[in-house]
Every structure is written in C-alpha cells, then in structure tokens.
Image 1: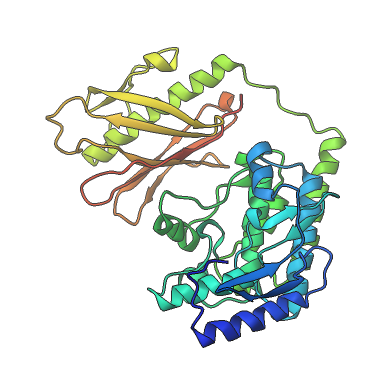
Image 2: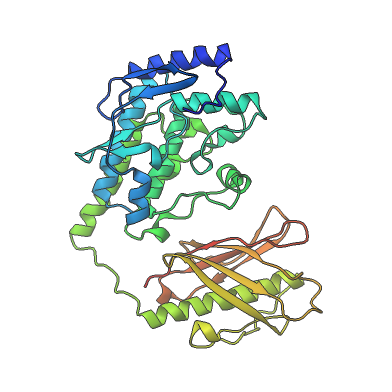
Length: 392
C-alpha cells in the first residue's frame, strides 16, 4: 500500500487494523480472501490470492454489452457478495467493474473490499473533505450527505448492471461535477434505445435500483437479482419463441441518417441563437456526410464530424464562419441527443434558462424522436459528447 498513508496517525492505524480483521473474517465463495495483513518497514501490506483472470472492466471494454445469461450470473454472484457483507455491516463503497475479477472457473469475485477504501477515505478527510468514490458509480447521497449504507453499494451494482446490458454507464461527463449533476438530477438514457432487445420490464427494475432516494431502491441485492432475472429471462423466452429481428439498415441509409442529424443540429442552433425559429427553413442536405451543409441565420456554418467510439458516440464541432453573428459567439457548442420512445414534440426548459427543441426523426432510422439540448456556461458554449444509436 502507499507509503504516504498516515503511518503515525493512531486513528488510521486502529481503523486499518479493525477493518482488515473484519474483512479477513469474511468467508464467502465470491469474496476474495485476505490471508494476512500488517506493516513492514513503514509499508502496510495485505496478502490475498493471485487471480490471473481478467476483470469485468476489461471484459466490457473488449466485448461491449454482455449476453443476458452472463449478466445474470455475474449479478447474482456479486449481489450475493454484497448481501453477505452487508449482513455484517460492511460496506464496500467502491463497487465497479474493475473490482470484479474472474477466477479460472469464470466465477466473479469481488475485490478491494473495505481496506483501501478506508485508507483513501481517511486521507480525504484530512485534506479537503473531498468526496470518496468512483464518480460514475457513486450514489446521489455520496455527493450530498456523504452517508453510506448497503443501498449505496446496491446503487453502484445497478450502474454496473446497466453497463453490462448496454455497454455504457447511465451517467457520464467530462468532469466529476458534470457526472455529479447527472446522478442528482437526470434519468438514465432509455435501455431499449441502447439495446433494443431489452424489455420495459428490465428498464423498470433498473430504474428502481437507480432511484435517487435510497428508500425507493431495492433493499437487498437478492430482491434486485430475482426481479432482474425474471425480466431478462422473460424477454429472452419471448425472443426465442419467434420474435423477429428487424432487418439491418443498409449502410447508405445509415450515412443518410447521420446527415439528417447534422442538419437538425444546425436548425437547433438557429433556434437557440435567435430565440425564435422559422420551421420552414430547410438547410441543404447532400447525399453524403462529407458534403453536408447546415445553416445558421441563413448563413453556412462548417460542420466537422468526428467519430469517437464504435458508431454510437459522436462529437460534432460547429464553427461560425461569419463574424457578424454576434448573438452566438464563436467556439464549440455543447449539446446532447437522447431518444424518446413516443412521438411527442415540444420544448424542454433547461436549468440555464435556455430551451431545447425536440425534432422528429424518420422511422427508417428505427428511432422516433431526437432531443437536442444546448447547454451554456457563461458566454462560451463548451463541447460535449453526443450519445446516440443508429441501426447499421
């Protein structure tokens, strides 16, 4: 362990010893054992079994969304770990894919259980009172009160299951502050958009596990696993009994869909810049993405499209070419597309006081609605990644 930990702090030493003893007493097939712990030459050490298998984070990075049967198996094993630990009043506090390692038999073992978390927490408390945890998996109460119980771990388990089913975490951002805002205020992107094979029943289970209030979540991992398995297996059974897979969209349609989305971004920026918009404005749509031209205030703007991840996550940088457009300053424009399951079309008021226009997308893209949010920070609009899924 890090030699910079407070070796002369008697409180830290007592807590380290107490937590190490507690974790060493855990006896569960899916919790990695602690054989020995102590201090030698100013360094703290913990002796654990060596596991040669990959962790869940690497598995997700290599494969993306996992098969339903594998998700159920991993969730049951990690969930059993957590319920067992919680019965002894032990909270992991950092449940995430990199802390789930597979042994040679393919079983998921939960690691990093409590000891390093204690060390980091103590260090944070002696410095600036910073929040402890991994932002993408931190429950709302960790960002606010800092109080944790078993439901804090269960929230992180829900985030991890969402990631196993879709290939991405439900809340993300370029800064911890942006991720915090998402955990506290936003709802996860709809599951069926990221993975059309998932049913509304699965989404209902996960939304309960990711509830902002701990009281509204599942209270044990066993309850969560039972409902999740029922929802997932029900969907798999229906699929195997004759659910038809939609035909793939030709590649030329995919490119056409991207071109259409680019044009919608241009129209949205026009509405935002002027505070009003003319619905009859029709920017030029060329047959390929390289030739797309979008317009702002009847003036062309340059669109620079860059694919950043597997065809699902894209960033669009739009630059003003005409300096006299003072209502919209030059720079990068932040926006966020998400898909809605119905055909509604309206305007959503954002916390910044700006508005986001909802545009319809033709059915041949297998999506019904796109929402574009324009976020403003001071006078400069900042770049933000856009997450969407176009059937190829």
